[in-house]
Length: 479
Image (cartoon, rainbow, N blue to C red; front, side, top):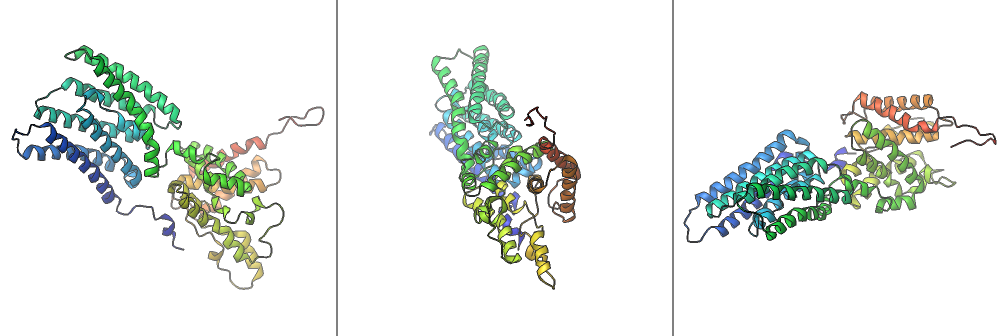
């Protein structure tokens, strides 16, 4: 089977496609800015075409600075076009909203909006850089327009620029990784309050006049309003670009999520197994510096393909095994089919590929030895190992490698009689060694040190099952 079929989402010509996203966002900003430019300049004032051209060129150069930063310093972001597109849309939306709301009142501008939106979607570093470039762009556009319109209001624009830079920076680092929307709102409102007080103090101390009640209302409305707008837009952006955020990952692992609910009801044994794998995958991911939320979500969904034939898997069988009497090649086809069926189900339920890819990676291309050995016993000829191997893809991320090891470890240890730490350690060493020899980790950047940490973490996680319980006088064991 062609392994590339499983990974059609992997971008081709990534830089070129990201440049198209960048140019589309830039064009929308330039068009909106020029239209505002035309509106504010008096119609009887002949300024010619050159100012418009120079105006557009400078906007393009500033925006290009952000693109070059991303290409040079955040190469992984360029590869993730969904996240890159979401950031550019958030930036363009923020710039356009600011230049038009300034027409109502400068204090109404949502200077930190890009930071509030982006920090919930991607890394805090990306929110920080987006916020800086957005505020530079806004200040250039507004000051240029004011200068040409002879309507200078430096203190209001500069104070909002300062608010956007400082407040947006706090947002980028304090709210990064926040998974609960209510906490996001509360922290965001606290940042907004501090920003309002800071702008009020600066303008009152250095401005040309004391703020009126109306201006204070605009300042409070624009600053607090952007928190609410950002929270309302977060699920829209997540759904529109099918992004994997920590908040969304928590939602994916809710037991009432559609596929998980089906797993719980239709394949309860697989559901319990997935919960156990998730517990170990989460701690292993944390131990080697990977995202524990993503590891847990991947573990929840790694076996959803068993929903197609749940009773053909041991953990869901009450008594009889429907595979008894089947030829080994037929049984192998049913068993290995759960990986490709899992991918199909995840795509059907619109599960992001960061999670769905694990369904075809967690067994890699390993042979299904129980059926391979059975086939060898039933025939005198050669047995094609490919017919008894998983037709998936070897892990391409550390998370996928973690799920592969935690899945096989959980199943193997569950099958052991009276497991103890020494026997489990020996088992894990063999599992890891077998997969290294089978070249299952050749496509991901996991290291031998990572694998050793994962082994020790799994042993530690299972440790609670090994300790000797205290015997009470009545013969019962303490818990």
